[in-house]
Image (cartoon, rainbow, N blue to C red; front, side, top):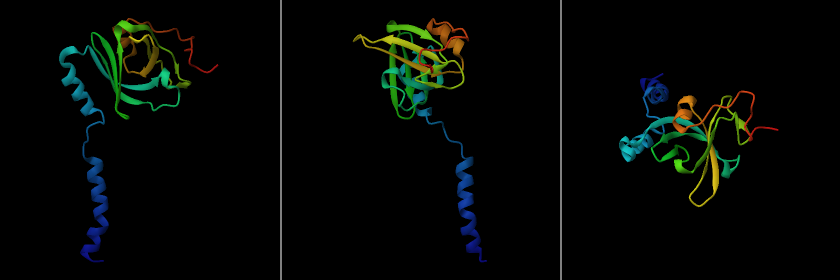
Length: 156
């Protein structure tokens, strides 16, 4: 085997190792920087959360991670993929709950669920899996539900 053949055999492995070991920013790192620049000191809480979807879009929508941000006036969720944002005016929030099920799915833990009424009168709700559920509940004025209750969206 010639030296050239050895190099050609080893090259794909070296490229793979280089890509695997090279530190990459998370998909949402750019979005977080954009949010911080946009909000400045206006964010009261910022956390990576798993969005489980808008009630109005139904069960067959893309769920995914993003930045959940609480400002003095609104709750925002900027999902990484697809790149979309949901803005919830705090003045329109009608309920904060912690169901175990959302849109007929469960992730094995209680969720942060916010219901609101928009300026046009339409109602909607969204749920997230968050690490500090009690902290988010305290910030939004909600209470943790008792363990024996299931959310209305759970299986019958």
